[in-house]
Every structure is written in C-alpha cells, then in structure tokens.
Amino acid sequence: MGIKLGLVGLGAFGSAFAPLFASHPLVDSVILCDAEADKVKKHAEDPAIAPKVAGQMLSLDEVCKSDCDAVVIITQPWLHAPQCIQVLEAGKYVYSAVPVISLPDDNEMLDWCEKIIETVERTGMEYMLGETTIYRPQTMFCRRMAQQGLFGDFVYAEAEYAHDLDNFYCSLRKVSAHRSTGKIGQMREQILAPYYQRGCKSHPMAYPTHSVSGVVEVMRSKPVSVSAIGFANRNNDPFFENHDFSNISAFFKLDNGCALRVAEMREISPNIGLDDEDFRIFGTRGSYSLNEWRNNGRVEPTPEPKKNELTKLTAEEMRDPLPPEVSAAFSEALSRKDGEVKDFLASGHGGSHPYLVHEFVSAVAERRRPQVSAWDAAMYMAMGVAAHQSAQKDGEIVKVVDFGKKWE
Ligand SMILES: NC(=O)c1ccc[n+]([C@@H]2O[C@H](COP(=O)([O-])OP(=O)(O)OC[C@H]3O[C@@H](n4cnc5c(N)ncnc54)[C@H](O)[C@@H]3O)[C@@H](O)[C@H]2O)c1
Image (cartoon, rainbow, N blue to C red; front, side, top):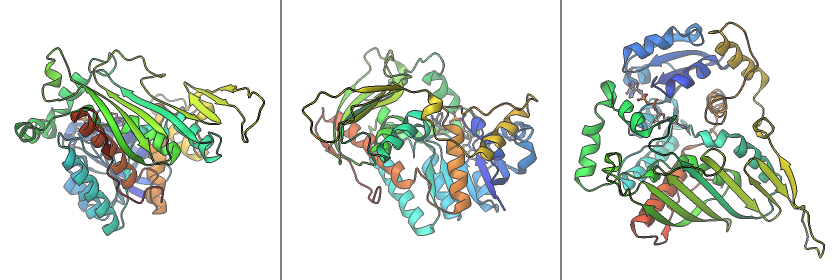
C-alpha cells in the first residue's frame, strides 16, 4: 500500500511540484490545499494530478486533521517553520520548501531550527528541507567522488547564489510583490512591520541554503567559524529599504580544515560559475569546477611530475539515476497533457525537482530519516546567521552554532 500526501501551497513553486508528488508510484492519493480556492480547483483539474485527488481543502488546519501520512509545505517563506511544527505535532512527516524560515531576526530563525529539531525528536516524525542544490548534478557527482576518496583532502571550495533583484527571468521585485498577494500573502507587511520597528534588518544570508548546502553535503563536514563582509545598497533602491546588506561574502572554516568562500548576492551583474548558483571544490588529488573533473592520481609523495587528467562532464553523466519505475511514472503523468509519452528529463533547478520528490516520498514510505533532515537544515541556517552577524561586526570571526548530530 502506498501513502497519502497533503500538498499545501499551490502557488508559483508548488505548481511545479504537485504533478510530481501526485504521480510518484508510491503515492496512492493526494489532498490539494491552498487558501485560494481557484488554485485548488485548477490543480484538481490537471490531468497529471486528477486521478489521485482524494480531497480539496482551503487550510492547513483541515489537512492536519485529515488521515494523510505526510504534508508538503510550499507556502511563503516567513511561514514555513510554525506550519511544519503544526504538521509534525499532528503525527505526520513534513517537507518544507526552503528556507527553514526567512525572518528579519537571526536569533528567532535559530530558535525555530531548535524547535523543529526538538519536535522531530519528541514526536518521532521526520522533517525534510526541499533544498534543490543537494540534487543538482554537480552535487551528486562530487558526492560520489568524495565517497570514493578521489578528492584526497579537501583544501578549498567556493559557492554562491547570485540572484540579482532585477534578474530578467526571475525578478525579485516581482516575486516579492506576488508573494504578498492573496488571503495569506497580504498579511506579510503586518507580520514583518514589528521586526523593522524594533530595528531588525533583512539580509541575503536569511536565505543561505542554495550556496552553503552543496559543499558541506559533499564533504560531510561541519562549519566551525566565519568572517564575512557585507555590501550595503548605495542607490537608495526601495527594495533594500529594510536591509542592512544587499550582498554578503563569507569565508568559513570547516571542521575538516578546508576553507570555504560563500557569496549570497542580490545586487550584482552576475557572471560567476556556470549558472550563478554553483560551487567549485578542490582537493589534494581531485577537483571539480565548471562541469570538469581533474585528477592528479597522486597517492604517495613522488619525485615525478603528475599530469592533472581532465574529464569533461555532462549533467546526465553527473546525475545519479532515478529508479526506472519512478521516471516512467513521472513521464507518463507529465505527458498526459500533450498526449505522447516522452523520455523523462529531470527538470527544475538543475533537474533537482524529481529527486526531491522521490527522496521525500521514499522516506515517508520507509519511515526513515530523509537525506536533508532537520539537522542539515539547521546547519545551513546557522551558517547564514553567523555570516550576517560577522558582516555586522565588519568581518569579526563568529562561531557557527552547532545543532549537533549531523555526520555523527
Ligand atoms: N530553488 C528553490 O528551492 C525555490 C524556488 C522558488 C521558491 N521556493 C520557495 O517556495 C515557497 C513558495 O514560493 P511561491 O513563489 O510558490 O509562493 P506563492 O506565494 O506563489 O505561493 C504560496 C501559496 O501558499 C498558500 N498558503 C500559505 N499558507 C497557507 C495555509 N496556511 N493554508 C493554505 N494555503 C496557504 C498561499 O495561498 C499561496 O498560494 C517559498 O517559500 C520559496 O522560498 C524555493
């Protein structure tokens, strides 16, 4: 027997995930939920979802009272953590869109991380953060190389999320305006105003997960401390009115001795890496950069020069395979709209979406801890908070809060 999922939040991002969750072969049925009735109706009529619809609801409260096994939360980012805790308390596994929560108060964000961990431990239910970077092709490839020891010792890495506010394909001004609409969205100002009144500031490290997660996942390392530099907007752009910084660049020490440079940029003409959301990792024996793997083959000290062999990689070569029955089900469901069943192509944020869906559904079905657990999620948020606190102190070294357990 398969599982029953509640899908809460059918907005811009939730719409990309609903057909994948509904068509996974281990999912028997789904409850669709959004505070906006028209969004629920639209998805219930989607041919890729319709055969599995077991309920249509307008609130998270109703979904928590239902008999579903797990709930997927893809709501506005300032709402995630309390909503996830409500689901865990209702005795269900929960999946959260990133980040854990985004609020202009660093200490409160860490408090929410702690509360989620405490609730997971007490209830025995599991939390998964839907971090797309963990299932990008370069992360999968580097994880395999690391597992075989082919990097040698890690010496240096760099990672960034460079998303300019006026990005042609995804304007942050428009995204922010859009998320502030509707019954739930229009409460945003009311929720955030008290923070700004008491002097709290927004900053890019409140959403650090895309840049920080890939490297620590590959290395199975923990952050120790950070020194960071902030850049404050200089042309009075109203978008940054309540921000102290529009960009933050941080230099972390990891517990394996590796140095990691991370940049979270919201005001930049981006031209970093391959697609402005990328990382590069360098070890004593092997290194990954810009879809290329280089390996010097050195194991022991040797007087002979070593050639650094180059392997160019495609995204397909870097990805782990999905189980064939899962790819086939996604293909079949997604083709229902246009008739012809095509070969399945992993898509969405570097092809990560189907992998996120597969990992969460499998974790629920097998009653196990998902790959991106409450502890991973808290570690990413702690890195962002420490970087922001360091930037506020002009680069002073700040320790990263350790939530424990991870990699132990
Ligand atoms: N790469 C990535 O991982 C990535 C990319 C884009 C968006 N996201 C995340 O996805 C999330 C959603 O973004 P979006 O653009 O789809 O937002 P959106 O505003 O389009 O959609 C959010 C939806 O949630 C619904 N909602 C909120 N609370 C609810 C409740 N209690 N009950 C019922 N419905 C509720 C709203 O009505 C709205 O339709 C954000 O948190 C964002 O950070 C992640």
